[in-house]
Image 1 (cartoon, rainbow, N blue to C red):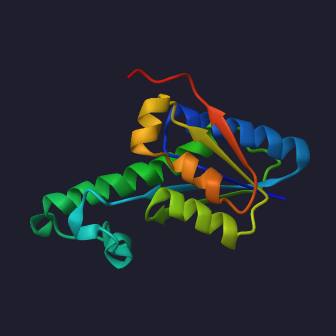
Image 2: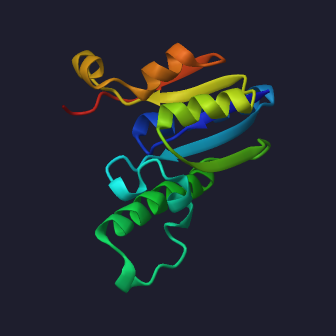
Length: 161
């Protein structure tokens, strides 16, 4: 059995890792932790996976644009997050896989769940108020409505508004 855990660094997503790990240890599941980088605010990289894969491949600083620097930081932050999780939690006895993805988070979560034939998605809810969730929309809401498997949503303390 396989659990998919999308993370974004929020307290709710870290609580989701903790809960998924508890389930995996209890029932012998394997886990895959993913983080998806979306460059929607960096026009040069928007929807260009080839550029994204090359973003930190050693461009000379003199050739880097501000967009390149932003993209590098976004990718580095997500990679650092994935690397930090095994240091923060005890995965002894649990098969763990990590993957950094490019694209809209909800699309990548659904695509990974479907293609990987996952049995459960455990993810955080960012703690937005009901009004904000209505207007802003939510990755969690979209995943719940379209997931090919059950979704367990883990809450964090409500964030300041």
